[in-house]
Length: 406
Image (cartoon, rainbow, N blue to C red; front, top):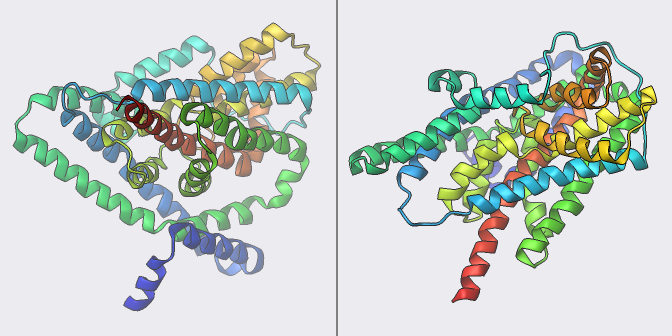
């Protein structure tokens, strides 16, 4: 048994995940009536990631900032600019594609059990109250913006703490990181359960009615991931961007696709940043921050579904309104929660810009949940992989600048 485990772990994680996908599909298609127990693996995997991610973020950020040497520069300004550019251009892609390839909707049942924000001010209000949330409540509710805020404040105040205190924080951080690595090793089994559950519950047929909308959404997301992001990367580092783009998609995007949560994928991204040799002082902050505000996929979803509703109702959208929608999509995306389906709740906000009634907007959310099996998974893969991509780009650009200076 030990030799089998050793041989299994010698395979790459991506290879093992592919095995899990194949098994999940096979069980769901052939013997689903005898293998319902497989779904527990998916629930346990996502639950374990969500359980460990909040405390991991708190400890890593606190440790990184408390040990940050005064005068040492980080790349946070460049990363924030990249996050802004990435999210805004994604909103532009969604709006432009919706005008070039307009689609209409067949409404699903109204999603009456959700409570979307009533306006952009409510989005900002939510963000501000998340920042000042009680730290214990922030950990219990996985409020990553609140966790990040407390980690930064405590880390800064602990810069003058004794070496013993800093060592304790460092040891706790290392211990929780080791725990996360163990959880990640179980990803193939968790993904097997997630794939099985998605196919056995929804089936591929559930997506057929909304095929055109789904194709448009996925086309926009792939265009951002494979065209827009590489262009941004090339502008910053002046070299072939695709090796780095493909690696972030392969090692971050794939797991994010199945967990459908940027927050739950934070441990995976932190591990990838370490493997890439990036500055820990930077990525320990930029990755959890990116899971909160770097939401290119969400910007695509909000803009495409909003304009699909407009086309369905025959609402005329002029160029200036379209430009405003691009900005609103990007800003709203930054307010989307880092959980599955978080972007859908911001659609009524964008719809209100076009005068679309709230009851219609709620039905658009219903459509979103129908196609979320693929839409939300792909959206999260773009969001999460972009966090690592832009963090790495800022690090490479800084190193190139330092090399030229020397």
